[in-house]
Length: 230
Image (tube, rainbow, N blue to C red; front, side, top):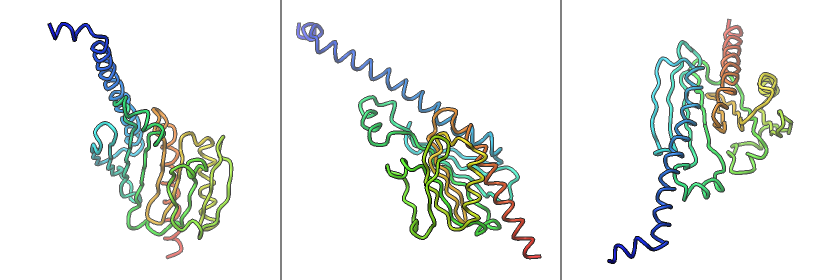
């Protein structure tokens, strides 16, 4: 009798409905996150044509890491990429994560080979809104020259060590007229960093230009160094 009485209570039906809803939400969120990270990593692989690659799960359904060694590239040693995703599979936690973190994040680091290190000065292009909201802190920013400029429909901060770096970042802006969801580009003496919000299809629109720009830049600097040494 007790079991029959419980089954007839409205709370029981609410519990069943909530359980079904959370289960459906888990399935939807899992599929959504898998599609986002596959879209991002496949875009990297399509461009880099790796001779070696390794993909690691670092956070259940919300974190993945890729280690990619490009094929026949003497100046880019390897690429590290980490994607962190909102917990779409957990409808109870997802709204809070959305308010705190706001969006998915893809960090790409292209690490130069030894022969290409110290060829470039430091420079950054970072969206102003992103910089003011939990954006990366640029160490030694006070030692760099800086200015604000428009890139597409957004406002960006440009930091640069010298005029060559400013010119090189300006060349990227000319090639990628609309930055889309690219929030930060960083040139360093031993590596380059890119931060993209990895909405499905977005990485495939942005990364080819970034990769080609960086490869040509490093190649030009390397050839210039060799000509001066002759």
